Image 1 (tube, rainbow, N blue to C red):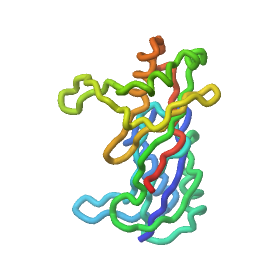
Image 2: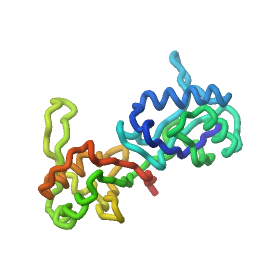
Image 3: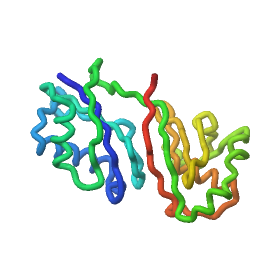
Length: 215
């Protein structure tokens, strides 16, 4: 059995398809590309494909990751080209490497994610109090509690690695792993509130530029 790690982008209208729909899309691409994908054992076998750290609905991405196990070896470039032939505009594989399959679980654990945020009104950038925000003893976000479904406050200061301006964009590097994951929507909402700015979420476009793997 062979394992391949593929990098793909997800842009424009494709940012509105759900994680489940993306899985189905890749399953169809595998079939149309005649890729001999490996299956799990048991009463309900499924294709051995894993999308690493699924992206939130509405976000674009320049570097998502998916692992695919196959029954036979492939030349990485040819595997990528076969899959791309069956994908719609807005989603495309841009890199493929063969990786060591140490176990049935993911061999690509991540630690951080980098995001790029663009604002419909670029004057907002000059009003963001980034330094003061980062110097606070706590960085409080509001998120829904999984059990009660109520909004609760949470300190995420240890999950924010970087937050800075780069040209006409706001960049952030935040935790994104199996134990800690920070949604950039919650962080930007907290920063906007702290800065005393009125900026609805629909006027902010969020792109995940890369996933940073663990050492």
